[in-house]
Image (cartoon, rainbow, N blue to C red; front, side, top):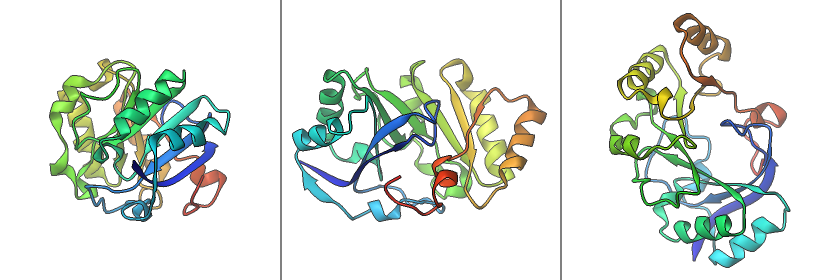
Length: 212
């Protein structure tokens, strides 16, 4: 069984898949408490569903792209069975996970989007840097920037681990905290080889809308 916060069909708002139709499976529970978290409702809210029922709900939307997110989805051991079954169905499976939990055991067919936490999140010390060694070229690394300190820290980490040679590296702002234009200018000034992203679902709908 899985504790599921919500399952919905929307436009992918982030990552290199932004703009595509996507089914989202948001699982309940998180081991982090980021200062800017926009899904705190997933910390505890949820209903029990069998893995088979979740697969059935995903298939009902007739959409081949599915993202498993949270909360922190890797906290629920049964998520691995879910991802494997979805891959077996021929679906393109994305996993949105923090950098705080081992990603090495995830089905290799899954595209892992690893969100390493910057200082302003308050969770910087929870990053599991061993995960860097498990990153493949079809994975993605994400940094959410709230301050200039975050940006400089992320830039140093990118260079230290040669991240842009491993996989696409995404960088976006904490919505409502850092002006998007400012981050864009920093990236341009430094010729940083990252992919800038906006959370486009927050512009299509309202920033606090759920189920989108």
